[in-house]
Length: 386
Image 1 (cartoon, rainbow, N blue to C red):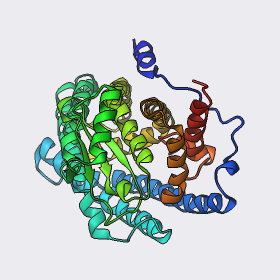
Image 2: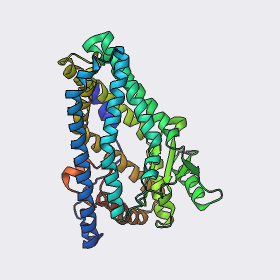
Image 3: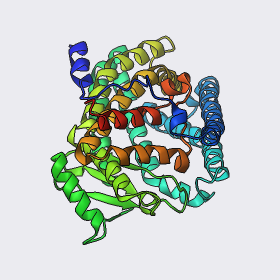
């Protein structure tokens, strides 16, 4: 049943992403490739150090936090809430210097201002929702562990799936709070209406989010599902650095995600992973007394973090497949491979993306096809190789 469900979710209308016959030096100068490589090396180092710092912090919490839990005298649930808050706050403060380092690195390479307050403000809704999600999950898991012992994962996994679906659903509205509607009677609004009609997703709200006070990079994303579905476009995409055709490619890409139900499919992938992952956490923590003891929560977080690193290649592979499908739908909706080719060439300039990153980065960090893979798709479409 698991394999059948995975196969059904795996199926997409994605053409080949093979790069045979495509040389990045045909599309990018030596100087552009060198700049992108230098920038990416710094970004990879920041990511690696942040990952190591997170694991080291959890190891320290595993060793030191349990000795203070028994003295709290707050009961199982009360202690779980306090331990959860300590972990979340500690991990956020540990990650903060690396987030600031990444922001400064972008600024150093001319990708945006070093505006810390604006950067923090842009994260307030997602951080708050994530904290609430984590605390509710902690309370439920500890409560179920106290009731069902080592079999807590059986009733907990469906709860995880429900919470993940609720989180994804509400995010459609939360992440659209700081946005504004497209200008009335504008060419962009007419283009969006036409693309929605072509994609078969009429009435999908498309908003603009102001991010230019903390970044110059361009982006857009689709969030939510059902009535909470929204497409959000960063204002940096509309600052006249990109042509009308390039902007339409981006919007068609996001509408392609909506049409192919990629967010609900991602939730279903999570459902496939939730049961075995919860089982692994239950078995490993049971050796230390189980999660009915809140003192073992840091160890559970450590297991989840390591499991997340190990599962990243599969997660990224699925994500790249869905992103490629959205690219393909954008090509067919706009019938403009030239604009798509220019768009992804310009991403090297506006975001310093490496056109063809090292294999390990591609496997562990890249959740989108590479710039060269996306350019090759556009070229093959233009050549009629569909």
